[in-house]
Image (cartoon, rainbow, N blue to C red; front, side):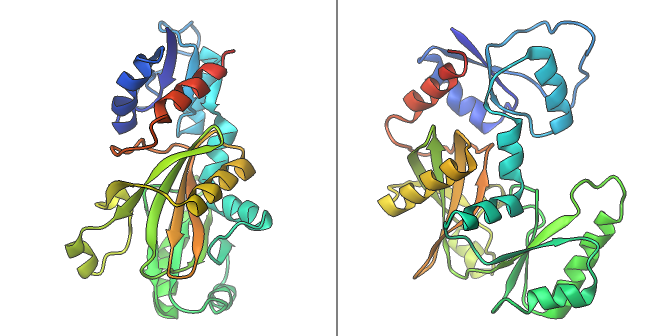
Length: 285
């Protein structure tokens, strides 16, 4: 049986373990952080293939060198998806629909910042360029609020060890429906709609991240949504990709992508795990 190294032991690990085991893939946990890693001796446990490159590139580099693994999603795939600005630029250049977006690379003075914000019509979303799970995303409705949020970002960016000193200004799409489409080896294999509970929406909350309290429900994605998700994965060249789609009354745009997507506890297409197992096995053929 093929031994698959998975660097998370959370939801995805638990949900994929039994379905992949029945398809000849033994899912094992390769701990990537919160541990000591002996660099000058051979590892005690061996694997045939890695699932998704670790979220921390430094630890990932050490484990990659020790285990010499082919990855389903390698370092380049993870870093490509994590760079939200790079994704928006690449998809826009390819003619795929994305929200109007401007990247800000600190230090930028107030005049330049406000001039960039003035190009948008309506509220803005300020979004750190390389965070996940909705971390640090703020909606702003006026110049003073924008300046206040940016002041905090500048404090963080002033710290010399901060690697990413950029953030995005992005148009806010009110009342957008939020979908996560899953693409495996170039084919959309289903998706979920992420919605906040009614009481949360009535209280003014708008982030649809599951880690922020939203609920993911399996849905039958329209062909238009599926094809767009597949085009995104092809442009970015990422084999296992979550594609976040935002749909308003008259637009469908790509919000973000995730090369480390959680396998939702909801129904995907019938062939989801067959296709995932085949993708894993192909890495060592």
